Length: 451
Length: 89
Image (cartoon, rainbow over all chains, first blue to last red; front, side, top):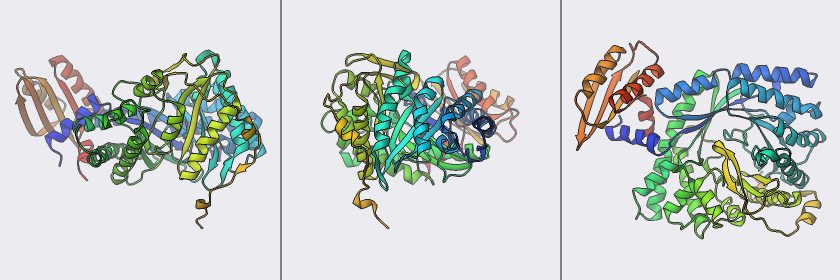
């Protein structure tokens, strides 16, 4: 039984420290929707998403009221669309439009899965499909796209890496009137996970059940507050405190996930315990690192502090939930974290340091705005670097970078809402095109051969 | 199903009467009350049985928050499971 102190602590977490369930994401298999034509398939996709996820918003709102804990986003992820329209890839935008329409009908904020998995090689239908991504992102509001370009098991598909450099540029260019927001809804992955509830990289893996509920929990503010209570503790004690806090947060997620799955007639998938910041004050991962003692995020010591944070979060989370999955760790998106935004504006954090940080946290180069004239091959080279980190370290890495059209270092992009705002960060000016134009594959590392 | 009702804010007359009256009206049966005053600060935690509640849980929770606004206190009505989940192994 809980004590009065426990009750008051939970209420303070929600009211003062931004504890929330960041997202309830329903994963839906679209494989049963495949028909002879794109038009018929699109109609079936729309119907399936609207019927299976019909009650997601109401259920989330009811649970939020019942447990007194905000559920910020309601989302849907679907089978990678490239698989659904392999027979007519040039018409994939029809499926994209159907999904975006379904998302609008349901009243959800994002729908993920306009995706392709090309980590070993790019099939012809996937090449055609990937080329449709920029146009589809420009013509839809809620749809998110992702492409898996590498894995520890298969190495890195450098043809896909090169293509994605161009796709990011085009996605930003086609949405130039909105600071290139198209690129903010696009992720290039290495070791993409099939049960991630967070956007923009969520999709529903083919190894999953038909209808699954995955829940993403957050709470950077709660962790920071807990650390503020022990300002002089050594790092062993600090790690312990983070672990205990992560446990409590994840338990809330587990409760909501199980109940949501029951009410939505879905299988309970996973709880993803990720410290996902928002641009709100006090909801920042950067500020946790600063509370641990790093002067300004991006300074020396940042990687060490982040490594400890990420690991402690996982340990607390694993203990608290019967099924932990997704990305589970700390997110470091620049535009969505007030501490990161400030450090970037002051020139204290660089792309190189962010890359180093991605070696020890759960994601990659996330929501970083760069000059609009950055060559596609340079963006591809960034993707290759991140994919290499993921491949060698057996972890998910991702790139969500926005080459903001017409903007240069010193300017700013602003997307509003959860996507936030970011200063344009400088990139290295050297030419990496020779590396990228070589093509081929970077072979899988020796330690991937475990059979 | 049991709910935890938490009332916090600056102490004043008649808080318990108002809140318990409201809960009785909604069909909730109060099983336990603990209350403390720290300086001018009032904190009360009630456990209420909601099995005979006359409205949906979420509706009563929203009404509680509204009552809190009227009397200048913060009032939360939450399913007890959230506390069991977060504070026990």
